[in-house]
Length: 381
Image (spheres, rainbow, N blue to C red):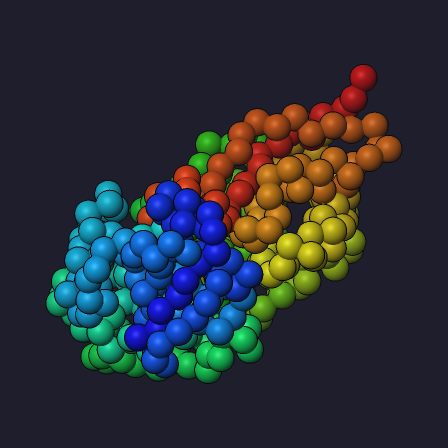
């Protein structure tokens, strides 16, 4: 096991439960090879134990106690995560949200009685068998499927992997959310197949006024179907033909009518002459690094500028960002720039975040990543 000694003063944030220790905060690393490290202050006080990495985040803390990081450890953490979630056992939701559940690098999504997992750090990957055993020990899992096939930093030295870890995984399955059915492609869908973080926001769009709605980056129709269920005439747009086909099937099994179009959202906005009462834009993460923030603001400003041309005066624009490095101020700034000089204003009606199965810990700002601004387009003075 490695031993990590910190520079003077770094222990303060660890004692306040911020889990990341960066490379420049480390004074010395000694000991054996391994993916678990004991962490000490500069004065030699034991601070806890965490995943070790050769990336710019040297340690991700797991515990402040002198305890083994074994199957029993993960079993207790998963049980604790389940108790925090106010969902019935037959529902689908995120069971483990990495740092939000004090299991950095570990994502576990529940699909009825099956589970899809991601291991996003080398330490989590190295202890994969213990984590899988813990899931089996605390649930009645019919299958566990790995979706660690995301783009990663080479410094984390992770291989892209996906495939069954336990049981027989269905090629596709149908889950229910807000009384609507959704087909989920476990093996090929984005992330783990579905975006549970938008659950409450998808339900909230049903309360919006209006008759016509546009859902950009619709994926498999999450916002579009909820709008259609509340009586809107809806158009859903996504550049992925495969996702659009699933969205069409989702509309069919819910007996809803939605006009789903396979197109780049920017191209659609430039080419349409239609006007809408509601426009939803939930693009994928635009940036991974803080240094790319200006680029993201520019893209979102262009998106906002195009949306204002298809949105009726008095209409509602819901714009979301799932990138942590695009903070609320940056998102609002992009909206402001998008209509600058147009004689229009955005009246901010609401600001919402990820659903409760993606916990936001006040001491860990990175756990708050999804932000949605709900605004009405109005004429200025």
